[in-house]
Image 1 (cartoon, rainbow over the protein chains, first blue to last red):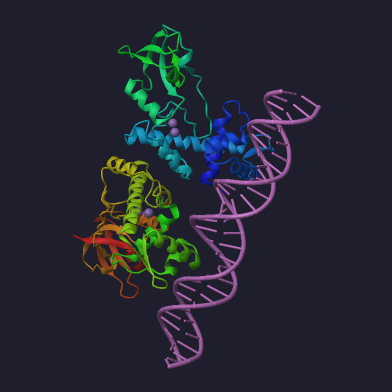
Image 2: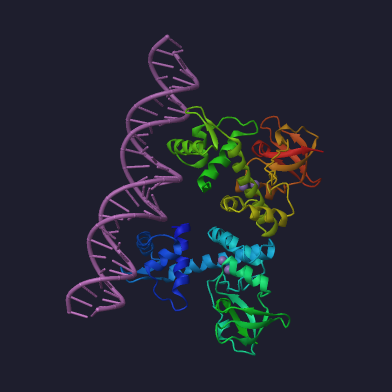
Length: 220
Length: 220
DNA sequence: ATATATTTTTAGGTTAGCCTAAATTTTTTA
DNA sequence: TAAAAAATTTAGGCTAACCTAAAAATATAT
Ligand SMILES: [Mn+2]
Ligand SMILES: [Mn+2]
Ligand SMILES: [Mn+2]
Ligand SMILES: [Mn+2]
């Protein structure tokens, strides 16, 4: 049988909270992420377990089964492909596409996804630098570093964001920090860890620790 | 408040069944079109009436209010624009897009629709020849004639279809009858009203009355 | 103008996905 | 290790969108 909109969202969120190591996800964490109450989450977990999509033992937290992981990755693939479409083809800003993609990711039809993928030229990353799973369900997270790990004098490439909130993305836009930008750390303030950086060899600006914590970068 | 997926479908179907003259639509007709039972339709009609989207007096059938008409036309606009996208950009056949568009038509976001419209070059017709409402909600049905009204010797342009079933559209594909094709009626059989027609000045083929009844054409 | 047939509505129920409040289990602290 | 705190589950309810069966209204036929 088909999975509902709501079930797909649970699986996607379990995948995200579970992290690369497939750690157990708590009922409360899911309640928080789904904007529901813990009791509602318990209801849904029983259902997902009955369908064989999650491993669930009462009070023990949940992880995805192989089958649940597959569904989650398909949803993520659709979400990210639609985001590419919205930005590359329709001209949306990277700060505007998430909510629309939240809806589009639940449109069924395998052939639609594959045709969309081809139309977009088989992109490997979405507008936020997140990797797009391939048609077979392979999803490889590149191991970027977080900006806070970069030392004074280093030059890095801006590769992605951890915070996807429109307000953060708009802040980056105003600072000229876009995907692929070269960031050279000139100075790090001892007191608050704010940094003075040079963007693309041009203007210098200050970024707060809060910003650094949410920037994914790559050396060289 | 927002209208649900289901409510939008009811409004769209009422619009279709109501026709150009805005005639009253019966409970049973809606049950048929929505694949539900009459009792379920009655439930929904009460709800739509409470929201001011339809005129409804018990046992009297329903019509759309101004507000309901607006919603219906927005859904139709989205449906037809997405169909254009699927055919023109993703390479689907005109027989494959209806079901996917049934889902996409419920994606919210005004700005998405307008950007999609611009991306597609503000098309006036969908892949089946149906007119696309403009951004203001104006929908003008061109007055095509039905193939059965064409006389022997006349040359007409193929402009649209009444039946949108994949099997019918595939039959037209196999016959070489596409949107914009020139159809010249060479002979009409008295007995079963089947016709012998020439397509684009080339090959001659027979079309049954059933086919003629579902072809929209234009003189000259 | 009745009687019969058809259409529509009402009555009462179900399921998915949510809720609050209360009970239970697990974890933390003393 | 026992008490307190936190997390989780259970119990009981709600709403949207459906259902079947029965009642009521309307339309049709004699
Ligand atoms: Mn997103
Ligand atoms: Mn993204
Ligand atoms: Mn269609
Ligand atoms: Mn169409």
